[in-house]
Length: 320
Image (cartoon, rainbow, N blue to C red; front, side):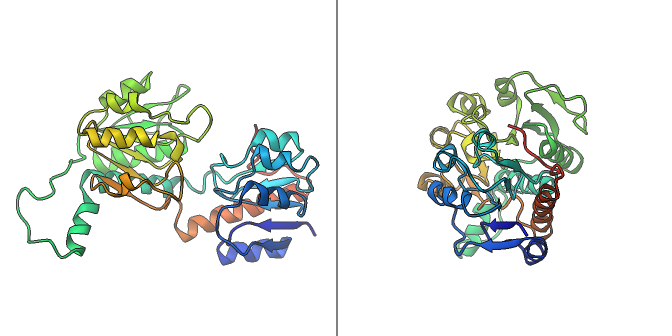
């Protein structure tokens, strides 16, 4: 029976399914793995089921030239914590869990849009602090979504799910930028050729692109300065897509109206300058945090493992 390490505790149903099929080991910590710890696992197990923050980097693979591990069955659609090229060079396959996360992540995008535009976080803090003196006509006036323009950066599964919610549910106009042409966005939507055009036209910008070397700091000082003064930036993708220092500077200068963030550059560290601002809605990476979603992700990862050790191609094999 293959020996498999699961790096973080998963829902009970997933752990049971994994134990039925494999000799499962687990870690005592829920903290992300270091490169050194990841390197040690490469020599001890036949496969690893890692997740966000477990650093299977080129450095880790460099410490173990001939790993025992033959598959990293990632729990999550994003795999920027795994150097897929280094894994392939070492003879290690990589799989992920797309599809299962789409709707839950799109829901979080809409939550952050509403929290930011309607100043929900500020309102809740006001009530909790006991400082609310009652309703009045100009209290916490925000941005109404109906008829506003949503700009989506990245029109994949999640981008399309956000577009459906925004257009059908809130009456928003949808524009988007994508690295390739999209024949069908699923709703009436207009593809724009440049990020600058999107930034200048949108009332709300949502980031839904994968983390790659090309998308790092895709949203920089130039992008932020092109946005409208009332516009909101929402990031439900990966933290390093946004230059956080530039975002803080843009907020302090009043270049944009606010932000909603579920991910951060130095996660789990969040800059004090962001935590101090009332015009920023902050969530602790809740994108897929629903039990049935996490169960679906886990079962997908277990199926990738099962197929691999049965001599089949894992259903969600990642290509470098």
